[in-house]
Length: 105
Image 1 (spheres, helix red, strand yellow):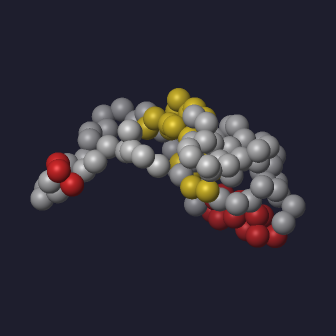
Image 2: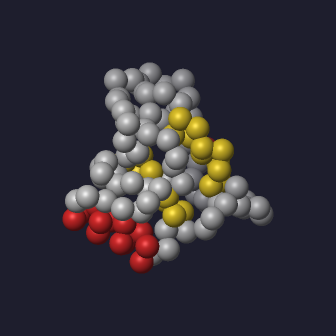
């Protein structure tokens, strides 16, 4: 997931006007990546992308409005892979983990 500023890319046709955007599309293709965001995330451009290497891995994608004074939509999504277990990091104390929900942005 990332804010990739290539507003000239047409994801439906896998085409772009600018050379840098075409190189980005080529890199996606070379690495067998799929872009799964379907709605514009900043004005009428799709800039906040979710790239995956496996069809069906990501789903339930929702735009959730902007956070604070950002002009981008927040993107919420689910990882749908069956059998995925929550990662366990030995030595990482729970007190060092803090939920972002309710934080004063």
